Amino acid sequence: MPIYKYECVTRNSETVVGKISASSTNAAVDRLRKMNFTVVEIKQSRFDALERFFKNERPVKVGDLSLFSRQLASMLGAGIPVTRAIATIAKQTRNPSFRKALENIAANVESGMNLTDSFSGYPHIFDDLYVNLIESGEIGGMLEGSLLRIAEQLQKDKKLKDSISSATFYPKMVMGFAILVLIGMLLFLVPTFKGMVKSGSDVPGITKFVFNLSDALRAKWYWFIVAVVGIFVAIKTFSSSRVGKMIWDRNKTRIPIFGQITEKTIIARFSRTLSTLLDGGIPVIQAMQSSGDTAGSVIVAEKVREASFNVEQGNRISDELDKQGIFPGTVIHMIAVGEETGQLPELLERVATFYEEEVENLSKTLSSVIEPLMLIMVGILVGGILISLYLPIFTAVSTQM
Image (cartoon, rainbow, N blue to C red; front, side, top):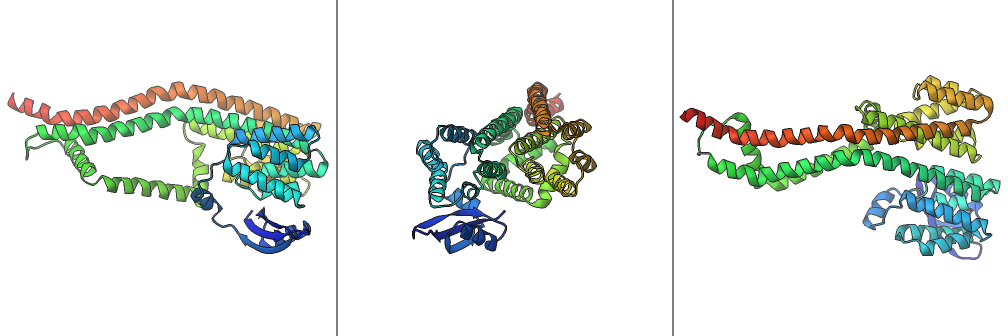
């Protein structure tokens, strides 16, 4: 949902400044008025991400959120008021942007805003899952339990991300090393070999290509930088668009080995999130939609949302998800059993645990498979350039003989 910046006045004539998420400007104003605020100014924040970039705000890590949730749950369990607890944790927080957000949340709650609306004003820190569980705990009087569920969910999510990062770390490092070696050879090694070849000599086509590439890189290196930056920005922009996301989502699960990790990660994240939300008392429809949105796939999010509309008409969750064809039969069967036995959160938890372990095992296997392939690729790259450089020498020697 869009984010709106507001400036309001409380009953005590105090000025309150903050952010709130709502479907429209009128909806945002209505929510603020229900909190007994007089709206002075409100406008949509269209460039929130750019503002945070230029302000040099550090992103809030998953580990920081998990620690905050556990600390807040512990302090609430000890009987400390929520505003005092949040303000106390804010003083101990090292991340400046996170500390500022917590201070504003504590001030907003102190001035009369409910906890859910206060957290929803910072969507770049607290996502829909977090806000939904906070709302459930606040309404049901089980805020401490909701915070512990959030902390556990975040910890599991962090573990899943770490498994994926470890699987892709080695290929990224080798690719980076290969590019540096290639640039180094073109800048320093190729000119040396070119000087050994007589001007006007007939050289093989591949050698001529390497010579020309080296000359171009040395003479107009800045154009290569502009080209690389331009390609990166274009790819980033396209991948952020709806069309780009759809194309990527359709093909990312087809990539050898990595596709399996991606597919299992989506299933694990969806199952864990849905289990956490249902266990936290969130209505089924809302829980399904939030779980689809956080699964990590635009296609899955749309299919789950479509299934949720049919579930709202009284159909079974397992039947509707099965029609969408986005999850394996095993997952659908487990959901069906959970619906029949009334233990859906527990069985979804088992599904999530199983696929998280699968991702972890695949990540470990991936290193042993990728390592020799990457080494062969680097060898072909370096060897190809060396052969192209030595070809004129071989040709000259064979001609003399």
